[in-house]
Length: 500
Image (cartoon, rainbow, N blue to C red; front, top):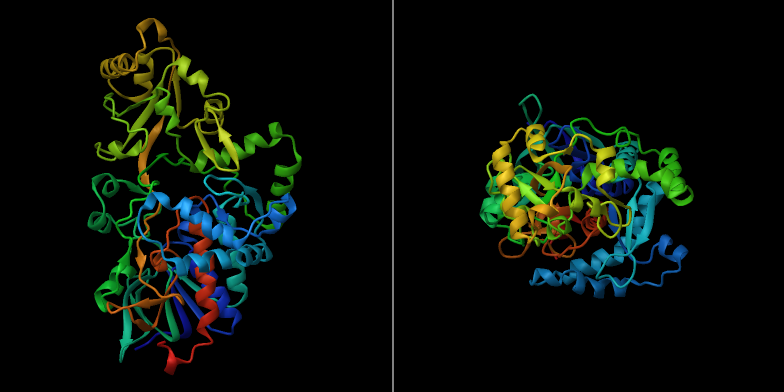
């Protein structure tokens, strides 16, 4: 028997799911959200918080002359490396709805810095939430709860209820293992994210380096996508697109989060942060920003182009492709290594233009920043033998590997001097996959004959539908744009005329 009855049931409480829930609730819908993870937020909570759009108040204040049409055109440049067709209907939806969606987020209480330039965009369009993705979730969740949206965590979708060809609800498993049946009078919305957390699904679409990568957000296992495949023969579009950012090299997370990341992103606190970023001398705010940058980012490929070595825990060198430094690492046992360099090279990465990592538009992090902000991954010693001891690896193997590395780089023994440095461990991570369910311009899920499935919608990564989102800030923009787009339509549905 059903154990719940709502107008709208949403699977996933990340950015797209919460945006959808808010818009549906504003229209008068009763909304129930099931979230697989232990708390709301999904992958959005882990994001840096970049939102890319034209026609923003920030652009106007900075004197930037931009337009929706120019953003649409520039996405040809941004997505050129994909070498596959884009869904231009969904691209148009993204660029047209991104400006009002940014203002909507601001009205909810989210503060943004920007706009920041990023090539190959012809105008600066990237806006960064202060202090990051957690602020987006904080304000979305507060508004959803204010509207009476019910969010149930540790609640995983098991099946869809289908009656006479229409999706009428969900079957979920609660935290205690019990089964719950929840009916949806209007619609079920899949806002369940990508499939980056599923090794089995990665193996369907990708080669070994991506299959072996560590997921940044392991809860996104793609179960709802596979369910739509099984029940309705729905296609997963662009499932095999290994974009430039997978796998990506990142430092392992800190064992205990920085106090900065634990601050509640209220309007007052983020307003103070925003004021400080604009007004205070860089020397005052730099330590604060470094705690953010060094927490979520990884090393730049330039480290290896300049001569750093990647060494596994056995002291052996890992082959590095400067275009994708993590690809060979993921094939190593444990997918684990350290970045090792001598004093001469390390000294180079203490000033522009040689930085260890960067958050575009926010800050650049140098070696001394990692020494101060991430002492858990910063290691130094006067000799390679002492460094090996600190890292727990065989000294003779490290010595042999580094001598061979320097010789291959054309450096003689007299050029090498201590102290020596290691950053790490690093791993090859997968941040997001691009495969989403086939949808129409309304974001109704399509069956194997490309017909809309009555009662079933998708948004965010689950409803990406073939739109290409390369570059910073497009995935989050799509999450909120698509979630709002679905939520605004649901209460206006004429259920007897749902098929076009």
